[in-house]
Structure formats: C-alpha cells, structure tokens
Length: 166
Image (cartoon, rainbow, N blue to C red; front, top):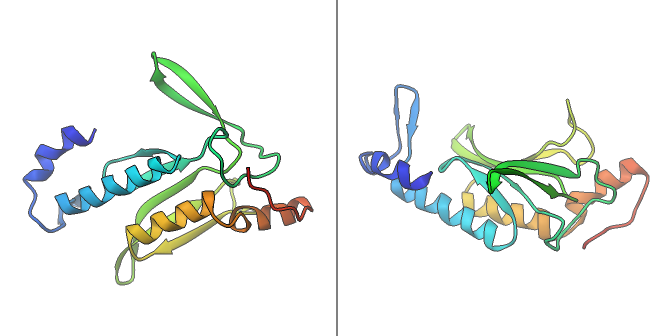
C-alpha cells in the first residue's frame, strides 16, 4: 500500500497542506509513521494501518505481555491474509487504535481502547500525546509495561484485585 502511494506523495511539497479538504502528507511524516509501525511490529504487536495517520493494533495470545483474565472478545478475524482464507487470532488483551487527532494547537496522536459498546466501559480510555514517538511509547507501556493500566479498572469492575502478566 505504501509503495503505491509514494509517487503521489513525492509530488507533494515538503510541508503538509490542505487541498480540497484532503491531507497531503510529506515524506518525512510518512517515514516517521512507517518507522513507528515497524517499532510496534518489532515488539510483537500486529498493526494494520492506512499509511499515514491511523492504525489498529493488538497483541495475540502467543506474544507475552499484559492480558485481561477471561477477556470476552477472544477472537479477531482477518480476511484473506493466508492463502485467501480467514485467519482467526486469539486475543487476551483489547484492540487499540492510534490516530492523528485535531487539537487546540495543531494535532496530537490519540491512543484509544474502546472495548465496550456504547461505552465507555471499564478499562476504556483515550490518551493524547503531542508526538508520535510519545504515543508509541504509551502503546508499548499499555501492552508490555505496567499491567495496572490495562487491568486495574477492568479487574475492579469484575471484583478482582490480581494483576496479571503472561
């Protein structure tokens, strides 16, 4: 997807512009985004993205990290990734989203986990970061750092106090 977008992006000026309501992303921003995706993947997260401003990420059960006991949304289906068949991955932690978001002084990166519908529910949140690098650090902390961020509110709702890390 990125390879096909590069010729169009190469024609853009060195700065981001608004053209007919569409964002043109400069190559430096694209490079930073690509590096962020690769950093998340290198740490074991699965990342799906739109090449410049939004990504969905999760940790499968086979990758050690923070988890929620008896997590209800246990299966995630990806279409056509293996021999044209559906692939089911077992999850024990919520799916997160990282996206560029408007802010009072420009833009920020928002990391969001919103598992309950309509929500917010226990453990649902949105945290904003001023840079993509800070947001990536936050994502990694959520999935692999202090398990309290992922589990405390969720466990309190379930009436448990144990902190888990697989």
